[in-house]
Structures are given as C-alpha cells and as structure tokens.
Length: 246
Image (cartoon, rainbow, N blue to C red):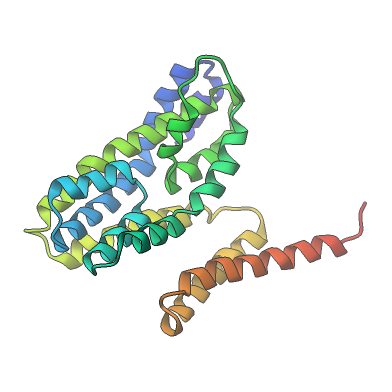
C-alpha cells in the first residue's frame, strides 16, 4: 500500500488515479467486502431467497448491514413500509460519509456523475479515501475514489453468488460469521488514529454495545452509537471550550 500511495502522489490524471484506486481496492477493502458478501449469500440461501434475488439485493442495495436487516425482516413477514423504514435507519451512516467525503473532491469538467457514484460509497472504501485524500492532489481524488468504489462493488456480486452456492456444502457457522469481517476491518482502519478522544469513542461504543445488547437488544446499536458517541463529543466540546485560547 505504501507503493500505491507513493504512485498516487506522483499521479496527475484521472486515469492514473482510477487505476491506482482499483489496485488499492484489490489489495485492501475489496477482499474484505468479498468475504462479507459471501456470508450474506449464505444468509440469503438460509432464508429461502433465490440466488437471483440475493444477488440483486447486493447489487442494488449494496449496504451489508441494510441487506441483513432487509432479508431478516422480510423472512419474518414484516410489512414493506416497516422494512423500508428499518433499512433506511441502518443506512443513515451514508449521509455523514458522503458529507465528509465529497466536499474534499473539487469539481472538474467532464467528470463522471457524482449522483450515480454515491452508490459506490461503502464503509471500507470511505475509510481508505478519508485516510489517503489529504496525501494526494485534490484533482485526482475522484478518480481514486471511483477506482476503489467500482472494484468493491463488482466484487460484491460474485461474492454473493459464491456464498449462496457454497452454503449447501459449508457449515453455516463458517459462512455466516464472514458478514462481520467488513465492519471489523472498518474498525481496525481507525486503530492508528492520532486523536485520543477518537480512540476513547471507539472503545466506549464497543463496550456499551456489548452491555446494552444484553439489556435492550433492539436498541443497543442506537444507544451505544448515538448515545455514547454524543457523550464523547460533548466531553470534547466542553473541554475545548474551557481550554484558554493562545
């Protein structure tokens, strides 16, 4: 990855950045997303969906947590409106991802549609771009993002099909845990963050999630994420307000 980053610093064109983005995706987030989609394909088979239906969900929804919620609620007979609301709530994280990622990409002439490329935003690709954008030229950032995003999206399709097929031959306890590989990779991407408070927020959210899942399993994610995330932010806000200005 260090070599790719060095080549990125020397890149000048959209085409070069796109090629390096594809390369970075194949080395990093691509295999991780592939593993997650294998697990999802096995889940689709387990709830009785066809391989076409399962693959269509990965292709057009392309949001692993939302996909899991979608098929679980559908398999339980939930109404379409309830399913839509639940999936929308699980996907609200993409709003903050887009709002933090795309303002870092300057507008250039004859670039591919940004509206369509929003579909390519995923946790792993977002983490890579947020890490690398400050180190590369602004005018090639869009090409780099599209390279990572497209290769990850493409890999999601065969990953889902593979998971669906092998679920008949591989024990469910082997395939299903693969859905957790992607969020684990996303978490580990922030292990080297230099801001101490960010590390505290990650640790506090993880501990709170494990505790509240035992008490309120339906709302554990909301409590640990929104509640404790806001608490840590508030602590940091008041700490900075009290710090005397230089």
